[in-house]
Length: 405
Image (spheres, rainbow, N blue to C red):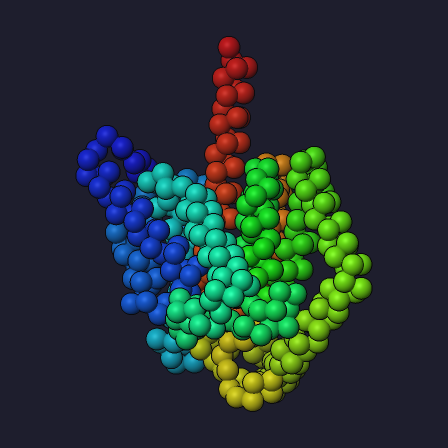
């Protein structure tokens, strides 16, 4: 018999509160401290959640769990063991590969009625407010981003990149490592016709200072408005575009020059990525069989761009392919792309699929694919798939009942 959460049971209620608390701890750390530099709370909370709920994985699972167990447990365990067999290293491979287990939080959330969507949205709303407030404080001269103690701590613990003199439209950048996730928040607010939060989220993406965040954010909004076709939000976007055009004209092309300088400033980073990609192809040229077999999570290669041996780089898809090889890479990509296919089938979730798709595009030049942040995003998408499946099943059941009566 399948486990069912009983909210009348006091012990179960206490257990639910503990799990809810741990899920919040995990989400906050995965999004704000992905480097896990605060007492390893991200890993600790994840391990506690999995250990406390082992019984759920041995119950009679509903259909959605077969995919989750397959990816979260089967694929994760196999890829780690396989990487250990290839490299002989244990700790490094586990540390790089364990993130697939994050998907195993879905059965916990479903069983205890934990609203992962709400937790995700609130977590990212806090990030929006934080980035916007920090940016405004810098703009008005109250606190330079490079003198802000919170940002400095995030910077020195490898959880953020900040630059008070970046060549961007706004002249600075506040890039929290998980800030690309904000692109998923845009369609959420557009879907709910929340203009204020849409604008705030767009500002946060602008303040992050990266081309990928800004351009994908703009493209995401355009695609969502085309699909949504809501008059109020469309009008607001049209007004925004008109204002940008007016500013471009009034400033005699200064804004366009900013975009040009912004791109020129990123050339060095582009060169590093290009040379790193060339190094990956050189590695395959020297080790052709590794293109099929993979080289393991902990394996390294010499990057001409970095001038050193590295295991990871800002080319997520190529790095994953180098690590696991073509066969496993196809399985991993099926895990990443299934939510796009599933959510696009439902009109109510189509915009979220668009946001997720743009996140996957941003992940190409950021190490945000197979990491704690990326897999937390994937978890969120599978949660939406589960919610939609439940709604569809309920509608089918109601339809059958109505036909009988």
